[in-house]
Length: 161
Image 1 (cartoon, rainbow, N blue to C red):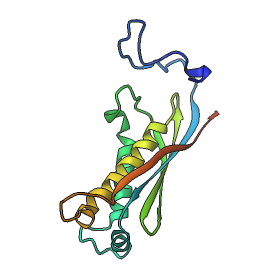
Image 2: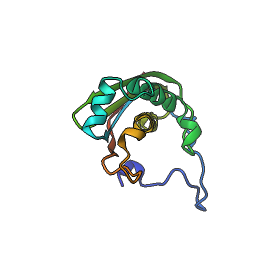
Image 3: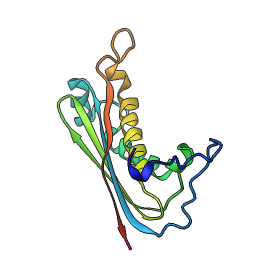
């Protein structure tokens, strides 16, 4: 653990879970960027690019899902504060056998936004999977070539106002 995280702040002295009180912290400008990728069959990536999957525009739908997830993170992650989201940016990078999604989240407040960025990435990639299920299944109904991988926070900063 780092020096800043030696004490577990989501538990009290008895070990009960509690929300961290951030009321005394000063407001700061914050940004977090997360990324991840979904591995797909090359034929599925081609079908996404040609808009031939029959379920609609996969990346546009995944973008909407990512943004919705960012805005609702506090409802799905226990002990996560509801924060004012000031900006969300989504970027897809399409390769032969994968699609990478990068989500950047900005806020002004007392706590960071990395959980929101991570939620955006994972939900956006889950939307891609959902819309591509039929194309990705093998004859046994399994997904041997499909995987969501390498989800991580790639950047995080805060600036004093």
